[in-house]
Length: 466
Length: 165
Image 1 (cartoon, one colour):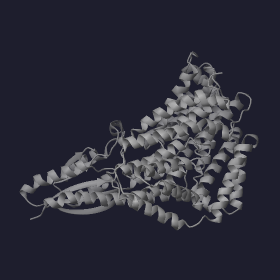
Image 2 (cartoon, helix red, strand yellow):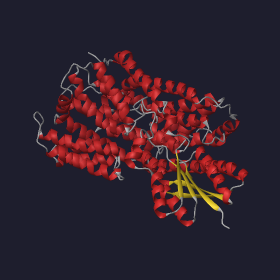
Image 3 (cartoon, rainbow over the protein chains, first blue to last red):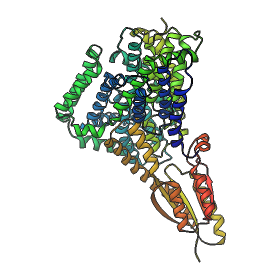
Image 4 (cartoon, rainbow over the protein chains, first blue to last red):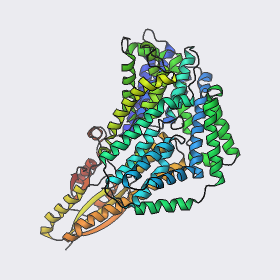
């Protein structure tokens, strides 16, 4: 087959039609069967992306009422949920940080401090990329850091055979991948996961138990920290220093820092608004909803003219709202029709699997999938299916609200996994074999994840086993 | 009398030092029957950049401005890489007395190679495989193999495909 896009485009609806119109299996409702048909189409389209991710979401959303899986009013109402607006807020924060130049200033000043020898410079790129992800969504950090790293390569005259060039580029990519697990602002997938967990509770009339910004970050940050430290060691080991004279790079950084001048009033107000927003999300996010707080502070950014609407349009792809809104509606339909509970009952009839084996298996499978598929799509596919498993193996389903997004952020090898890796591979300096040591980072990060689940999560009230 | 010509087709993702070495061996072999010239065709593959643009926009959900900045940054780096690699070919060829001419084009690899090979008669066309998993080549085909098939069909010269280093 020489046209994989067309194959995937046709396979999705064909598979959906097959699932939708086969005899309804015992124990599954017709609405549940139709929900699974929508899921089948989304699996094929999200995995092979014959169309953009948001297009798959809106197709799924349209099919839910058309096939009778969910009333139209209910499906469309899910578009207005908190998670979608929090994600919009996350991207607006990234937009204002890029537009005002505040993120460039922070990264250049930090890199200048690190630029004393090759090791420190490379570690500087790694840790600055990682640290910025605490506030700015990781893909935007990658887009910000790429030109800075390439400027360093040019200043140092590093060509395609340079190990330092490879190390600097991988430091940027791996720093942002590890950083994507730092906080709820680091990636949108964690918010999607929390919302899918929320819809699961609602549909099964379980007590609402919202997970807060600080709570989530305390559970995910240790894994993120472990990943970045392991990445530093692996990079140092695989790409040892070449003995370069860093003077041209230092000069370049000095010139860039000097050209920026002193910090502007606009940058200061951006800093103040974002810092206050984070404090408010932590303090009031659980009570009023993180989406509400994000909306309020987005409006403040626009009111202060720190961010203009045309800037927001240039920096944010609004498809993000369609992608997440649609994914939440599809997840909700799968829960409310009992489709995923039925599916898990068929796939996992025995319930004697230990919770730890389930957790480890989920993490490994999710981390594996995310090397090939967008991590947002992985969450949209994994979460609705995995949540009913918790009941089968006597686990708290909350565990998966952390487990899925963290392990979906452990893709360190293939350019198909994240935009950051696609960008650094796109420079032409790297081949897949150069990023293969990323498997070591994935392995030890998974280990760190299990250790965090065993020793850290109980401290935030999240025991894996009751 | 016209020189015997070799076409060395390279791009950001299709280049290896070994390919350059193979080109020199081939030029030395052909030089026994007269002067040899090497035409380096450097292709800036638009499709590669479009794939990355798609990932940044559709999967990273970054806006048009950010995506355009990333593309322009990568385009500039591709051009710098092209110059460095062309210098490598010249450094290998010129001491041996082979003339090197260079052209830099933007487009799809297969089309660019076929167009160049159609305009000038080449004794040998040298290309390298992009670094892709074997399974991917089996499932989705190989552009290098496609060039070889088309060149053979059109009778445009002899193709040597080198494995990426």
